[in-house]
Image 1 (cartoon, rainbow, N blue to C red):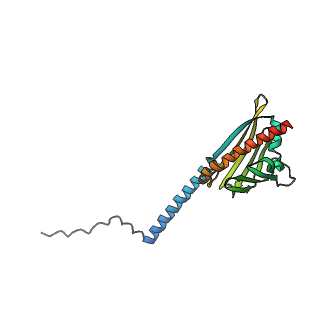
Image 2 (cartoon, rainbow, N blue to C red; image 1 turned 90 degrees about the horizontal axis):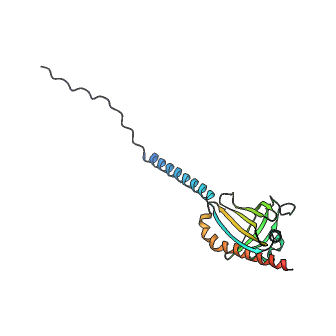
Amino acid sequence: MTRALPSAPTAGPTDPAPVPPRRRRRRVLLGAGAALVALLGGYTVWSNTHPVRLTTSIEMEASPDEVWQVLTDLPAYPQWNPFLISARVTSEGGRLEEGATLRNVMRDRTGDSTFTPEVLTLEPGRELRWLGKMGPGWIADGEHRFVIEEIGGGRVRLTQSESFTGVAVPFYEGRLRNDTLPQFRAMNEALARRVEALGRE
């Protein structure tokens, strides 16, 4: 009786070759970099679609035209305005109109800062709106509005507001609410006093 010889082992699936440590580190770094880019991209989109809004209103005895005349008399700002202590048109022609560029100096308790917004809306007796940008437009933008509404009885309401968007804005929200918003109120109050004083002349 012959003994059966042991059969040769059948070929199985080849085990994958181990990944060299250098290549493994590269994959980890690439994955981490992609995740960081996605995170920053998502934050940029979020910060530009979720504005920080400041708004404050005041009522006064005046007509919309009287308020408009004071609001748009930029050369007179240093005489009465505690917030926008200087404002002038710097674009060609020097006229306050849609598309014009302004040079505004803003003051709050942290000091003075200069910005150069573009006028977006100019509706006499109704609305003045401009947009200021810091950097390429996604770092910090501020859309500032003044809206004048008749409320009856010879009175109007002036609402001053600003919407801030951009990646830097969330880090400055506390400062905007604590330092800038009170200056909105101070300007509204000073404008009302000037309008009513001019109306008595």
